Amino acid sequence: MTATIPETHRDLLERPIVAHLGTVRESGHVHVNPMWYVYDGEKIRFTHTTGRKKFQNLQHDPAMTLEILDPENTGRYLELRGRLESIEKDEGAEFYKSLQRRYGVQYEIPDADERIVLTMVVEQVAKQ
Image (tube, rainbow, N blue to C red; front, side):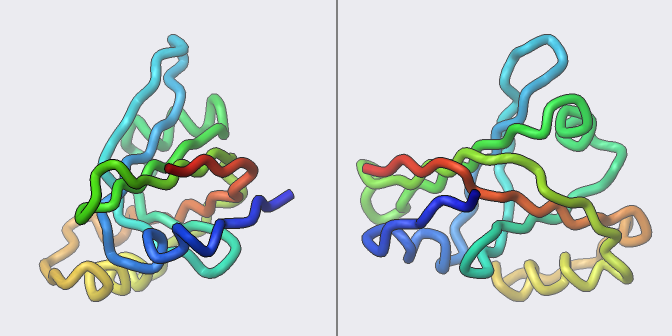
């Protein structure tokens, strides 16, 4: 079941804000990293590679939490709790390139042949 994003905080998903993605390590500790993302109106997608710890964590436990802090009002945030729904190959790093455009940067992608797209289903929402 996909949770509804409140209209009051939808702008945080639509703006190119660097968010923090939390995953669970095998030890039970939380692993948090800054991430680029895109929201399609229902699900959230990220770019990644299969050789990194976050990907390994998600193989062990598909739980994910994304926190987006409003850079103009740090007392306002959106927390999305959910799970990894799918992993797809990012052919030619095209999805990554679309995120580069969204975030206003462009550079070579040395690991383009290893890129994947992680899709998150949002199950719970918290906000302030």
